[in-house]
Amino acid sequence: MDKGKTLVIWLPKGETLYFENVEKLENTDSELKFDYLGVSTGKMRSAIFNQINIAGFALEKKEN
Image 1 (cartoon, one colour):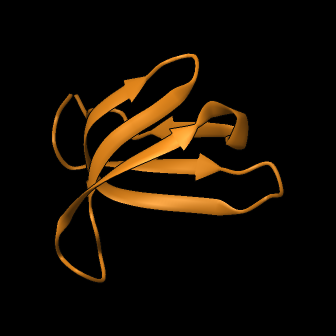
Image 2 (spheres, one colour; image 1 turned 90 degrees about the vertical axis):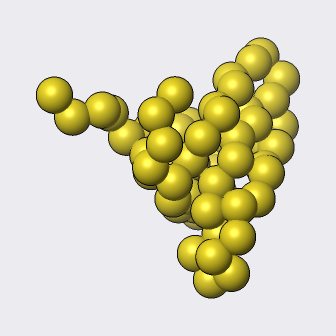
């Protein structure tokens, strides 16, 4: 996966989460895992979400 992509995650109760500079996205039946740049800290972080807690997600497409 290319660096610098934005990931949006929608939660079942309508909340929306935004992640910048997403790398190493892994989408399995049980988990969504990825690394991202924490905007407020400027540090790379890892995140893991249980699929049961996600209504949907969208990853920025690579521009042609």
